[in-house]
Amino acid sequence: MILPGLLLILVYNYGPMLGLVISFQKFIPARGIAHSAWIGLDNFKYVANLPDTKEILWNTIVIALMKMVANLIVPLVMALLLNEVRKAFFKRGVQTLIYLPHFLSWIILGGILIDILSPSEGIVGAMLKSVGIEPIYFLGSNHWFRFVLVTSDVWKEFGFNTIVYLAALTGINPSLYEAAIVDGAGRWKQTWYITLPGIASIIVLLSVLSLGNVLNAGFDQVFNLYSPQVYETGDIIDTFVYRIGLQEAQYGVATAVGLFKSIVSLSFISLSYYLAYRLANYRIF
Image (cartoon, rainbow, N blue to C red):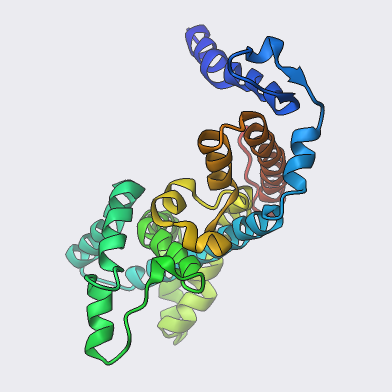
């Protein structure tokens, strides 16, 4: 029974990987893979010598790390706050509201953000004007663009991550809190000595597993929000591959960049699963 599934994986997941060979060719679509010239590592050397390569790699790592840290801290704080709420109706309502953006695509959210952050017609610009501050073009400013990316990513995903922490909180033995109350411990001490240690393994696990995304800064989000004005701080590996591959038709070069990213990402994913096993006893099999 598993044979059809394996065939689908081989055809649609592993079959296309044969196309990676064009990263070692001067690929011309009209000639195909069989008749395009082999050029060894020239595509990789070409990319390494581009003046923007270091900047793009730096942008990718910085944006990804900022998102990883924010997406670990904000959901954890939100889960701890919701855990203190005793009104079940209010708690479920807040969970639903913060979870909704997770289901929206970046095309929709990108349009919403462009309208909200517009310096001429956006609500944020109007609010800044009302307090005497000149409206800021957040999506056109190299200073603000990364913060917009991180903030909007947290807005979209922190509801989903909060639920993970809330699920972990339900596993803490209630008798520990009862014993702490008898000993005179307040809410803060209960959180510090019982709640946080109780979910420490989940915090470590999510932190370690996020290392695998260190080169994934979010193509959909950046592609829908950025412009040439913010290439200096917002251009990442995935958007660079899109431009050089589909817009400039340098398929071999784009594939070389993608292959490089995949190899580095595989290394980080392997490291993250090893650390998850060592630190949190997490294993897939």
